[in-house]
Image (cartoon, rainbow over all chains, first blue to last red; front, side):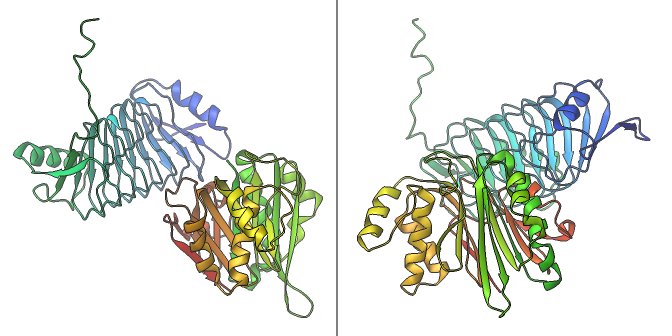
Length: 232
Length: 231
């Protein structure tokens, strides 16, 4: 470990185990900066962190990058494998490349920003997080997403939003097919505003917020009565 | 789980390094399958005819590669497998690759749920099996289709119709190198292509030490698509 000019910390996957890197990151004070070098597809980098730090991953990384985090802002200069930002609670994970399957799976909060394409099942079981994809998403994206928002700047694969609960998916490009109980709804002024805010957050410049499709649940497949158990 | 790797060399200057490159890739996949491992290596014999050799055994990939001197072996393509057994015994016979026909080899990550039915049908057609492994059924099914005139791509597409389960398959013949994933793309796969080679692995880090990987075209094979490269 040596010191960056900016006062940050360099951690190299060539020298350190994943556990050593994550332990070093966890000890950094809020506001610190760190750079992870030589990742070469390493899994589980920058996971389970609760400090408000900034992390750059300098290259292509593996599975579960930024998973379970509750605070840091992570940027990957490369592509990543499965389940980036899985179960994210807060903070952000930005990938300046493509991502594999299950991006943002079960994310409760925070923002996952993908500048390239995302593969199958992006935003699966989303629980309140925000998944912003500049490019395309693969089949079964938004599967069983319960809460939160997805934005797809390119095209969506087959069975988009299958078994959706209350998450909303905005798609700028073509939708190969909708999944069970997903439907395209009219775009309202508040949707346009929301999409504009998401585009600004991501830094995307290729999406027209007035020209996206809003996909939400048709609410025919699930029945949930929040007051059912009130008498207990 | 299970890990699969494959390397199809386009540049003959890399032929002497086939075993060395594959052994390193296979070692990276130990975490996906520490029970047993194996490789199929393709080279040209003294008469310039293609020749496939299979090395497989129980134990860690690194030990198996050292035991059979894999790193010193040359050739033009090869595939490998690290096995985490889920449905049949851990023995050398149950290890991958399976070689159902001359110069054909298959490695599989996943599981087939209707392999017993398909096996019975194949047995009634006179096909003989060596193990009760589900992947052997897929291997012999594909060989059976090819034996009846299908090309390798068509035979793999028949797997989508006839076999139920999760799979990423990597199948090679003396001239071809083919990858296919199931409809749900449940099992991982990543392909890297340069002017020198096509490489495939379950996870990217198994490709990370290949020469020129930094400038390779890296992509994830789509579900139900057959990707084929021909020598």
